Image (cartoon, rainbow, N blue to C red; front, side):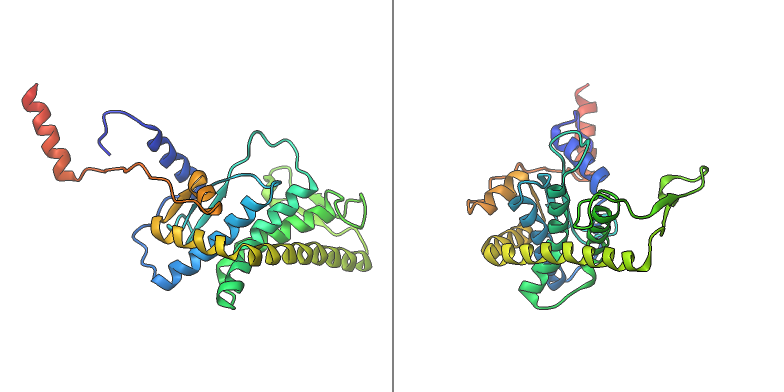
Length: 247
């Protein structure tokens, strides 16, 4: 950006690029798709704010980043050494927030929640099979197998339990997700006005940070935002010539 110094805004832009991916502003998106994305991301944000066990929201954006049309990014308060059952349930709730927000506003389902569904299913199954956080008790189901020459991502869990136990595991995963589903639906119906307010604010500003989200959630006016001016190529050339002339 041809600046003489680095400011906190530059660090924020760099952090967002690393955490959420590069912006794809050249992507053409219809107004209907933008509204759908805004409602979806607002659903995630509401559940992150409403649940005290969830990591605080860092930023929400409807600018396409990476492979996503929008991103809701939480950041932990500090180093995470372990997780509680309540924190896992909070993560499932926030993952369900986007899908249920679409159901409430549009009465239809889209493919936008596919990654969220994979994430919440993985969390629920890990609670049952790995962490003993279910009605099946403190038992681990399935053992990990993988080549010592391959990374952890290539490690797979083998089924070392009976078909009846597998059915119980599936039923318990369903129960956990169904319980969180009802909690999320009740919360979003209760806070529908806040959900709509955040979605409209996203359409207005395209991205909201933690302070702006809190203001909208509490029904206050959006705080003024520091304006970032990126000079054009012609302006940079003119400034460079003027600098050379003075020296």
